[in-house]
Length: 300
Ligand SMILES: O=P(O)(O)O[C@@H]1C[C@H](O)[C@@H](CO)O1
Ligand SMILES: Nc1nc2[nH]cnc2c(=O)[nH]1
Image 1 (cartoon, rainbow, N blue to C red):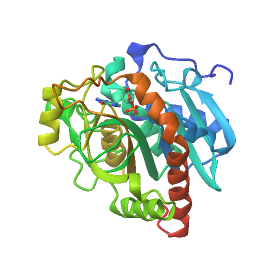
Image 2 (cartoon, rainbow, N blue to C red):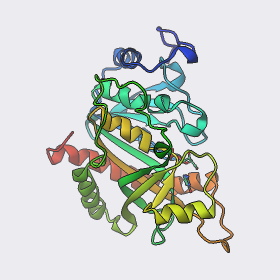
Image 3 (cartoon, protein in one colour):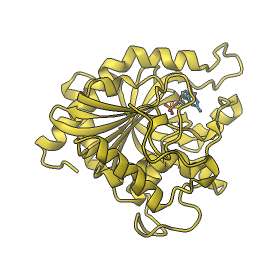
Image 4 (cartoon, rainbow, N blue to C red):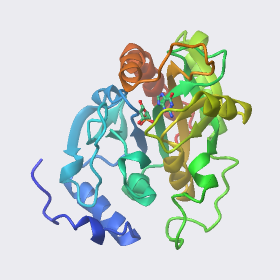
């Protein structure tokens, strides 16, 4: 992909306004004929999902006006348009995290681009540490709710002036994760023979990049979290604010260390390794869900 014709604004000039998002979406729409109804975000080591898209048109993030750059190993940094079983999709092969140093409005800006591209359903994946003691490495957790720790401290992607063209000032989050899509995922998982490693639980986001202490893991577990990670929640809030349906999955890539006698240490290599091992099943689960969205007539 050649460098974009709009030219890039300097970092300080980009304000992520409605007009900035519209300019980025218009540029993308002028470069591809795909009109996506489903937007997918790939978590650490889970970018293989994008490779499943047919008739791909792919853009490196650095070539997209106003787009941030991926800086984390396991996040390729490409926006891939294409079809999955005939359904037009756009897939972020790599996401942005608070710990990369970006403002929270910037890491979530792709959700607004999705909206302006015409996306109606967003499917997010992430790698997470398992806090629930019944969980095993390799389990896939359907996210039914979240704990937004940075949000408790005021770090919410919707803080600042509200842009009414995207959504209301005070959006509801008790219905953030679409219940029909959760049930669909359970049904599809059961048909695919995945029930043994398919879970439902609460995801807690922290800022990262340091992994949790033992005391933090114990606290988060007591607060009701089943898995802990460094992403997704901010994207979910912005996606819901602008009215898209949301479904999200965590791959439990490691067990959170809860015990002072444990020799285990969380590390990014293990996260990526587990991603590789479960990638195929995760892709089958997500692509079958997308097919059934149409079949069940509940497509977005
Ligand atoms: O993008 P996700 O949430 O999948 O990435 C997780 C959180 C950190 O970025 C990284 C830690 O290994 O994986
Ligand atoms: N915060 C956090 N993020 C993760 N991503 C993958 N594993 C983990 C973990 O144990 N903790």
